[in-house]
Image (cartoon, rainbow, N blue to C red):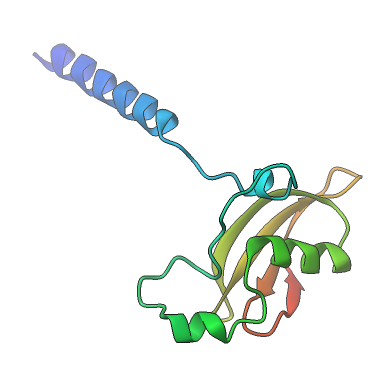
Length: 117
């Protein structure tokens, strides 16, 4: 009986992994390619955020956040995600330098400030 339980648990785990891989995932890196149009929402994914807060944002898209970050730090963008930056909506950008160093940059969407983490 315990062996059967382990096999069922493993099978369930494999099914969940396969299902999670088959679900569509929005690629922020693809959004940076001008040939691909992806709708990126501003700021963190927060259900309490209302349209008044969105209209007061300086940085209104992930693409804009990437442009601001790359104007300050050079590197290839590996990932962009919405995040809280100092308690404000913003973006966290993962960059790769030519030397192979990976680092993160945070862009505050309310004022456009950039900080390297």
